[in-house]
Length: 367
Ligand code: HEM
Image 1: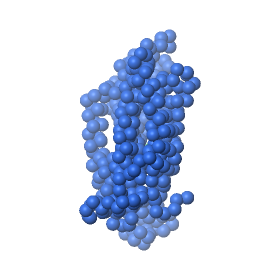
Image 2 (image 1 turned 120 degrees about the vertical axis):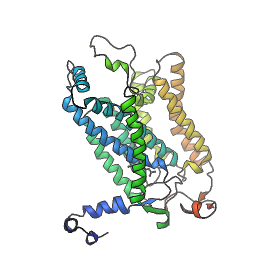
Image 3 (image 1 turned 180 degrees about the vertical axis):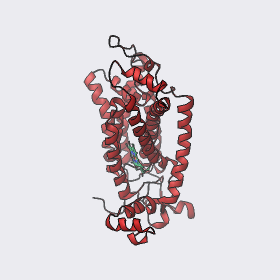
Image 4 (image 1 turned 30 degrees about the vertical axis):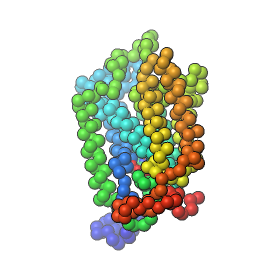
């Protein structure tokens, strides 16, 4: 849309000199989006909204929080009792962290299943892994990092808009018949997803605000006494299990960071030209085994590091790395994928639409 097409003269005047309205119109309204996206594609926008919720409540909380070993606990109690709606802000922020991680974990597993990390979206995926690292660092240390996350999220979206979204079939769009404008179709769908999300979120904040917390947080810190069991927040548990699976301390730290580092090189480990797990019968099985492996790691991370838990933790850790370093590279060459549909529209309009040997690899050359 050119600047002349805007009705409002002020908008037209500004846009002629600084084309921000054309840009927004193109990227948020016209933006051609595959018409077959399922609800798993709602989680990116939900992650963005969660991030905004965390930043706003975090800033307001920090206005009343005292980061001092002698005052921190009391300042939190004051927020809960005396600050207007302080309890609400704190419970939103507390539960917001958990919901943010739930949403982002679903977002990541969506990418893993539908092969969204494959060409030409490798950098989009890698920026996502940077976001994950920053989120974990922020949850661990707090404060300044949310603003860095915003910066990387903006890069993430720029990379997304370069080639547009992948889709459940994992094949490229082949023209306007395969896409619809982002607005109003996906804005409405995102709003619907948001209402469902907020329903669960509000239920947690108002009815079970401490469910995902830990009772130890209600005991003031005592510098002279180390707690008997240190258990991190639930979203760290799988990584904590990997950390403890290695007997050597440095080795454990390396394995823990290695678990994320391996995600960076994932686009080069899985070389299969077919993106979506829907057409990869063996990959699909291993995907679910991997998913179960992550749950097992999470469970083991919450248990004491001894006896059977240690054994299970070690097996699950080895499997985690085997999945990426051995299974995916082997499947890339050994698996015979099912035939791909000719286009996004064919499965809807024309029978099975299967075309033997069709490739999910991008048609245009990607540098
Ligand atoms: C603050 C955290 C994040 C935000 C706000 C965010 C935002 C978004 C949005 C809005 C989209 C488009 C909608 C969608 O596909 O759901 C998207 C797509 C994507 N994101 Fe994220 N993201 C975040 C974290 C991550 C992480 C941690 C990863 C991976 C490790 C990741 C990987 C991807 C990929 C591969 C796509 C393209 C998916 C496709 O088109 O199939 N993102 N992201």
